[in-house]
Image (cartoon, rainbow, N blue to C red; front, side):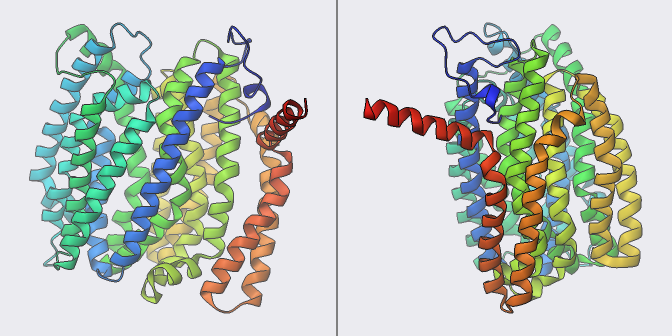
Length: 509
C-alpha cells in the first residue's frame, strides 16, 4: 500500500494492531504481493516495449491503427465481462465458504463471457463501423479474433479473484510472464510472415490462454463451476454497479481511439496508439500491481475507518511520488522518446503525448479511488463522476480533434481530468472521511521535485541537439534533480536509515 511512519512500526510479539493501524502480518503480505506484482509488470512491460521497438519497424501505422480498434473493443468487453465476480471474491471475508462462492462466481462469469463474445462476434461489423476504417481493412476479422480473450477471461475470473484475495501475486506474476513469452513468439512469427495486425491479435489470445491455464492449475482454491441461487443473487447485486463503472471507465479510457480514427484517420490513430501506450508507462507499471493488492488490503481493513484512511493517504502519496517523474520526463522529452524508440515516422504522436503523460498520473489516482470504493462496497458512488467525466471528454475531444488535431485531443483529456473529474472525485472521498487537506501536504515535496526536474531537463534540451543525447542526459539529470528534492523527506528513507543504524548497533555490540 505504501510505507509510512505509522505503517512501518516494529513488529510486536503478539502482532496485535493499534487502533488505526494495520496488522503487521497483513502489511508484510501486502508488501510481498505488491512487490511481486510490480516486478511482474516491469518484466512484462519491458518485454512488450522491446518487442514494439522491433514491430514498429516491421508493421506500418495502418497495422497499429487497425489493432487499436480491436484493443478498444476488447478492452470495453473485458471491463464488463465477469460481472464483477473477481472483485466480489477478492473482498469476501469468510474462508469456509470461499470454495462455494467461487464455484457460483465462475459459472456466472463464464456464461456471461460466452454470451458477450457471441454478441461481439455478430456485431463486429457495426462496432468497427464506428471507427470508420478504410475500405479493405481486416478490422472485423481482427476484432473477432482478439475478442476471444473475453471467453478466456471469463473462464478464469474466479481463479483470479481467489489469487487476489490470498495475496498470492507470485503465482499470477509467474503465470503472466509465461503468457507474455508465448505471446511474443506468436506475434513475431505472424508479423515476419506478413500477417500485419493479425499477429498482434493472435498474440493477445495465445498469451491469455497460456496464462489462464497456469492460473487454473496453480490456484490456491480448486474452482469448480457450481450454482447456489442465494450466492448468485448476492454476487450479482454486488457486481452490477461494477459493470456500469467498468463500462464507463473503458469509455473514458478508449473514446479517444474512436474519435482519432474517425476524424483524423487510421494512420494518425496508429501513431496515437503508440503515443498513448508510452504515456501509460507510469500507469501500467504501477496500477496493475496496485489493483491486485489494493482491493484485498482495503477489504481487510474495512472494520477500521482510521486505518483505511491512513492506508489510502499513504498509498496515494507513494503512487504519485513514484509516477510523477516518469510522466514529466515523457511529457518534456516526447519527440525524443518517439524518435529514439520508434523512428521519425512516429513523431506525429508527440503533440498528444505531452498532455497524455499528465493524464496518466491522474488516472492512476482515480484507479486507486475506485479500488477503495469497491473494497468498501461503495462501487455505485463513482458512477456520477464517471458520467460527468465521459460527457465532458467526448465533447472536448470531438471539438479538439476537429479544430486542433492531436493537440486538441490531448489538451481536452488533461483539461477534463483536472477541471471535472478530480474535483468531483475528491468530493466523493469526503464521505469516507478522506479530505484533500490530508493528502495535499504530502504532495508538496513531489511538486517541488517536479519543478526541479522540469528546470533540469529544459536546460539539457536547449543545450543539446541530438535526440538520443537529450533523452539520456536529460532523463538522468532530471531524475537526479527530482530525487535530491524528494528523497530526503520520505518516510521510506527514514525507515531505511533506522534499519541501517540498528544493524550497525547489533554488529558493534
